[in-house]
Length: 393
Image 1 (spheres, helix red, strand yellow):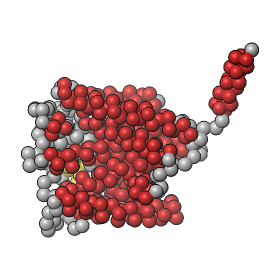
Image 2: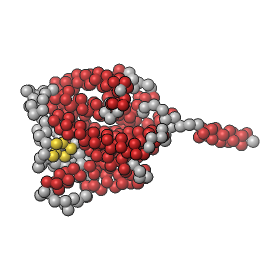
Image 3: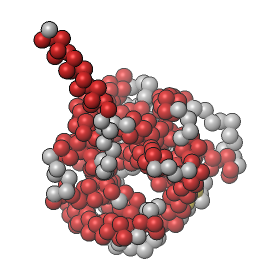
Image 4: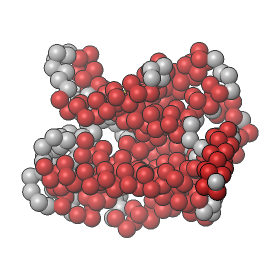
């Protein structure tokens, strides 16, 4: 009888818990933390590119690493691999959460679609007018901002598909795009050359266009983010700490798979490993993103998200340095556009008057982050005051 009563009480408690409204209010600060952290790393990569004489890059376009890089400089570039995939993935997460929020408050589908398209077009405009000149490119740059912009436009329609279909298509793209053959598109005419560069074959030949982040592989990453955001929307905020261990386990498993893929030296490697040298092991294709590259970078992102939940549990996200990271994560586009011009400190097409060594560049990066924290904090206050005018930035 006692056991039966206990079982009945347990059933009643479970039923009552299921009837309670799922808590959805408030920001997900662990996402802001992860995004802010990788944006700080991204700023490091860009400032070193602006002011250091030797800087890695173009992994995948170049079949081998730059021999001028020693291990320290190589790793200084390698840490930036976490940035673009996290940025694109979390763009998908944020898009899904934003759309679910708009739908729940009764916004018409047409208005939501137009809002997404406008934001995507604005990102393409920012890439052309603000980002390309910041990188001293004599031609238009199709970078990560442009790719996210096109991704938003695609998802303005694609979001109507079932989440399971989006997940399946995203995985098919990520796992199989290395075999994609676009040879039916001619390379000896301008439109064909540009189309192949933008779709899947990054490169910098034949100006005026320079594409590093092709749409096809990166839309797969954004689709994974969309799927995660859709699932996260229905998750009880009080139970978010339960995601910490699964995220950490996924992160470590992904990094372990990275080393397995590099060891097999076959499928998943767009750049082969030619020796046992640590730099050779870590030199993977980013342009376009190989499976090995995504295993490493998205695995790291999962660890950052788990760390963000750990910090959010302890209400540290608003304190001191952690508060600055949270602020960066809440102002991603403003941070991105501002940091490029802050760190280059010169007009377009003007070469640096001198070069900095590693320690000097690190100091410059740290000082710049303090300035960016002040600017981003003021921008947040301005956005609260004028949300209608600043909602797209």
